[in-house]
Length: 158
Image (tube, rainbow, N blue to C red):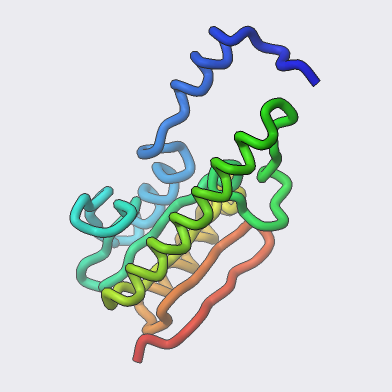
């Protein structure tokens, strides 16, 4: 299947993809801030530059796009039809890097939350995710993952 966009149009679209301050991230930040949580943004000293860092709670939050980070089983984790081998390689590298960063954070004593973009598409979902994260931040659970249809909490930090 041929690309419906010209190479110039495709390049323009891809250049507009942002890695920080995305809409899902901004909505979650607003929700947590309104609940009284204070955080640092994109800490360069931590592996993977987490989107939100809560030093007081020794916790970080990564807001992952389902497409780029390959949310398993998600309807938004599609693969482009053109240059499939290129995309598979790129996505595989993203998944490996995400896993390594996640493990590094846990080994360094940080608690890790992963919030998928699909869980932040509607304002009610954002509010629900913020509430779940608020409970998690106050708990001792080591990690949590929030998707559109599931919440997976893992481990106990002590």
